Amino acid sequence: MLQGVVSLLDKNADRDIRSIWKRLEDDFGLTAVQSSLAPHFSWHVAEEYDQVALRNNINQIASELKPFRIKTCGLGMFLSPEPVLFVQIVITQQLLDIHRKVFKSIEPCAKNSLSYYFPDSWTPHITLAFQDLREEQLSGIIADIHQEDFERWIDIDNFALMCPFEDAQLGLCRVDFSGK
Image (tube, rainbow, N blue to C red; front, side, top):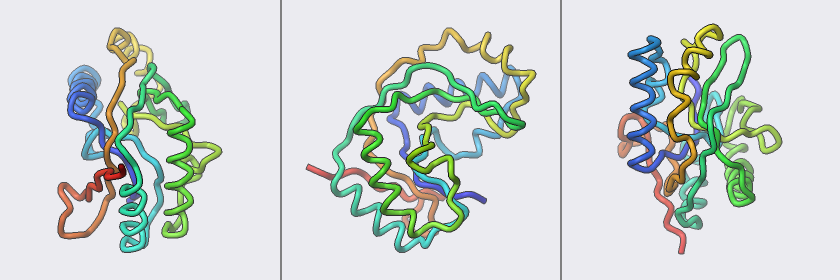
């Protein structure tokens, strides 16, 4: 099972994404995305991490970061034999700088990192459907949800890690940003 370093969304965005997930389940039978525990976007994904080193490095970065905002800008798709439907995140210099810092810090702790999350190929996004999504469903899904407001600002104030530590909730250790 893959592991990752993600940021959980603020309360309003979390609620809205869960609402879309529910519509996709009710209208199209799509449930796989709900196994991701919570709406989020990913900074890095790998097969495995040295958990102690990962947590130390993420705690250090989080101590230097202040909460910031991301902007979403519409729907996107990764078309492949297993398509992915997602909400696009606007890529800013601030987001790229944070991603590079995260990547540089945690890549040495990772085993078999996914190249999609390397700095030159990273596409930040919030997944709406994957794994059980079929290409022939895409036009119906887009027709069903195209009137959603996918342009919004989302407050980001954390990293979350899949981890085995005692403070994990739902298998996640949340590390809040505390920079000044």
